[in-house]
Image (cartoon, rainbow, N blue to C red; front, side):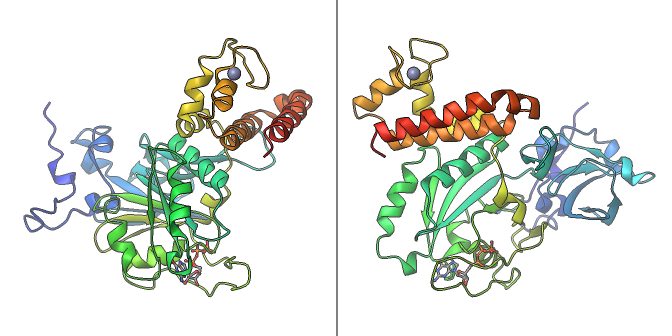
Length: 360
Ligand SMILES: Nc1nc2c(ncn2[C@@H]2O[C@H](COP(=O)(O)OP(=O)(O)OP(=O)(O)O)[C@@H](O)[C@H]2O)c(=O)[nH]1
Ligand SMILES: [Zn+2]
């Protein structure tokens, strides 16, 4: 059977007038999702996107559908469902193209879905003392792990005398991550983020409170959709102004997520994402003499050799170890944690010792 998905594809910029913009297209519908459903089923179980998660259900939207599905499907904001008209709560969740998740606090194994089908994760930091390399590395690892493309956005360039220094530090994080710097309050955001905010794309903003996420979202909408509040001048910390967890579609057809939950993301099962950020170190580690090399003091350790040779920044090695340890700890079950408490404590001491040894 030949499937024709053309009607579900976003209109291209070249032919915006050929037909009215498909709502599904603006919502992010695309071939990777369309191939999960037979064309003849599109009418009986039409695709809908989860626009918001409420206490009493999921707010979904599709072509000619806008409704609340009572709690049932194990879905999160950004998910695509095949809407079951007869029994909405039995709507099937489509395979995700990306997924941000975290472990529920308190329990060892329960996974909470945060956001699904995010194409680009804007990792926002301002050019002031909010800037923290380790935190950005963590967000980059999470984004890689989730399957989203991370882009680092440095804000408040208008208040900073040395933007180049922040740019250099952010660029050093990974050569796979683009970095942009801007004044979020000006009219730069829409243009600076345009490459990632095209019709049919879904983007999310991650970053500490007060770094300018809502301001950037405003810039994309050219309107005051997300309320921004005055920042406390003294410590560069913003007040908590964002409380919603939903997708908004810009006039240009880009779905935008700005959710508080994304800030508190823990590293869980993010081993691959971490290795992507620290690809150089992870590569070297495969060349250590011992398979289980801890890169502490083992003979034939390729990582330590590279540090000694000045090829690897020792501070970066320390951050990699911390991130990997955090991931291991968060990913472990309660039982594993208990059993591992002793070795975890030992590992922490080892990292601290390495810290001291390297004079960091
Ligand atoms: N001068 C200047 N001010 C900015 C910039 N970006 C954000 N601000 C200001 O910083 C304050 C906080 O910005 P928000 O956009 O609310 O920050 P947020 O990241 O959304 O904060 P939460 O909602 O708490 O997570 C506001 O007063 C903004 O106007 C910037 O690039 N330059
Ligand atoms: Zn080693």
